Image (cartoon, rainbow, N blue to C red; front, side, top):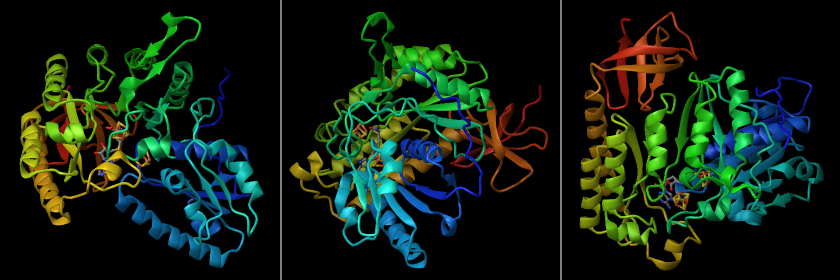
Length: 458
Ligand code: SAH
Ligand code: SF4
Ligand code: F3S
């Protein structure tokens, strides 16, 4: 396999037709937009952040919850106004919502292009074939596509940390989740293309890489000829960690049913593998976990947490929680609260259950928790998490952390910000260091979201 060592920052050539890209959803979608830009640059386009000047306007969309889609519908309305102003502008809806709704997006919405997550290589051709009365659509899903030979063009502002997709799709079919339908079957990417991309980023000044997959623990590269050359996630992590001690490695998302002891020990072994695991629990009730088809129990989850904490003391642990899933009782909800207290997550993403058409839950279980009850339970979960985040941060007061500087803090230009290995955000007064440097800081106080620090004395 040959690799493209092309420029990883956007080309800035005002003579090229402009492409404007708006990204919704998860980190994988952010990385997909970088793949899209790479493909479109090769076809002669250049990124623009001025929607009024773009020849092509792309929304890379998310379907995970109804409110995500509603927000995007609002934006599509606004894109249509562009169409009134400039006849030739092309409006493209790509990503998960394109995959889910397919040609429904073409009915009366003045959209010219619909492309699913596995069809981005065909974007230039689709765009060439668009005529005023002939929109183009490609929502074929693939069992092979990993875009492994495409070098994403990085759109991040700081040039310090980047995402690398190591796999696509998902085979888990959790009953509430639309992802297996929008992103298709799970497939792992060639480890050497991942290594090459990481090395290239490091050579270009990047200091942190986050390996992405819906379930990174099931990453597996099968070498047809020589099984000894198969690569699992733990081995992949090690390959990337060995690039340089100055390159930090993160990853997301770990599935509680699959996270292995081998991965946990590998994390402990390398200083530059960040000590943070995002381990979505979804619910603390076994009845709910079973109905969600998560394939683990509360007890299994708690055992994994104990293992992580015994092998990696101080490991940051974060999670995702769904409130008000089908049939959730007051007791199920209390089980979630008690699990949260038992684990003491450092932070969490918390959601109300949102029924997604076509999923197993939508087909088999009534969405029967009243909306007010969902809201009440979610609020209780958020309040508890805020208390625990604050407590978790307070426990860090007095500790020293090595932070990778991301840049000036949002509130004060005399302050820098950056993350500690455990993923907590640190801010500290500093006018000497700059983005991309490692700095030792000491925690002096905190909020529930941030550690307030000072430079540690050597
Ligand atoms: N692959 C990851 C999660 C991807 S989606 C994993 O399994 O851990 C991110 C989060 O969105 C999920 O963890 C879940 O908490 C939430 N989510 C997914 N579908 C949802 C739905 N229908 N309603 C509410 N939240 C949902
Ligand atoms: Fe969705 Fe479950 Fe796959 Fe995560 S593991 S993407 S929640 S089906
Ligand atoms: Fe990501 Fe949303 Fe698709 S969370 S995988 S962009 S449905």
